[in-house]
Amino acid sequence: MPETAIQDHYPDDYAQCYGCGRLNDKGLHVRSFYDGEVSTCRFTPRDEHLAIRGIVYGGLVASIIDCHATGTAAAAATLAAGDEISPETVRRFVTAHLGVDFLAPTPAGVELECRAVCSEVKARKVVVEVELRAGEKLTARAKVICVEAPPELFENA
Image (cartoon, rainbow, N blue to C red):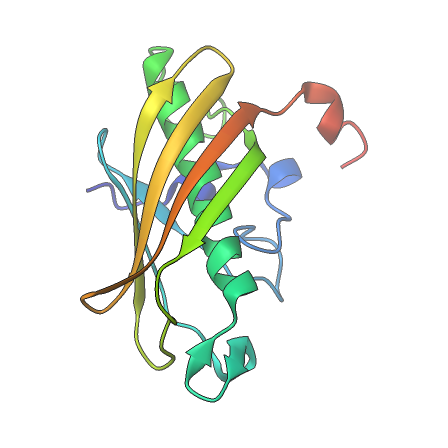
């Protein structure tokens, strides 16, 4: 497994995201590690991430999945193009569709783990399948369609 997260390779212009931006002091700092087949992310929710006592807010679960999927797509597409992942080569993806199935309440006080695989990698589109577990408990499953961000999206960044 790589030592550097995919998101750590994003250029500064791309590193502001609330979910995964390393330059966002108030963000979640989602960090994804891709081995060429599976991408893994770990996150421990804080007290402010609760929906009700003992249960993580579903929007947080979706946010973690979202940022993990776009990071996974960036890594998969960059490698598929024959490039190594670096700040000069990493491609940037955004979410076109986020479909999350909440299978069980996500308990608080447990490290969450997302595991993602790409079921489709095309020139500008990557489909990512994600599972989120709290300990051994599968609490959410998602299908995320990611598309490469157009350069003009970052012109005023």
